[in-house]
Length: 227
Image (cartoon, rainbow, N blue to C red):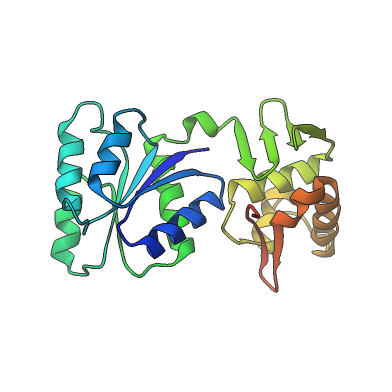
């Protein structure tokens, strides 16, 4: 689980971003102004910062500049978010030290993908590589074990690989073709019905956690945390 700070003065946007990121297993804390963000930064550093450019008390570009000038925060991954659309604005943000740049409005899936990519590049998920957590389901990769509500859940090898793939791509639709290739292999010639049956048994074994696996008709499956 990664800790993400969302610095956004628009309450509706902040809540959407926070909900989306929590829904794929991240710990998220929101701030509506630079002052509150700086105060929290004194006690705990996040794995990534989602930073709006236009804040009521300080420009986001100035915040990034300060972060990069401080030895304790100079390497914190930052995605800048703004309503500005000119190429110059984007270049300015990246030049001053932002790692990525998103222009409003953007889709939830784009947000999740950008965050995931930056965490991977920055190494912010290094501590997570041995485990995966989503809702009440936990995978210990080293032990090849799955826990539901802190109790061991017995899965077959294919069920385990299927669950691991879905949780690794949490919040993003994984197509049937990709699942069959990754779990069963490129030379798999069985009918896709095999996948459907494994999904069915996996949902049953995960009990309440099984509701996190959702079917995307004619496309594939997506796993997202439920409220």
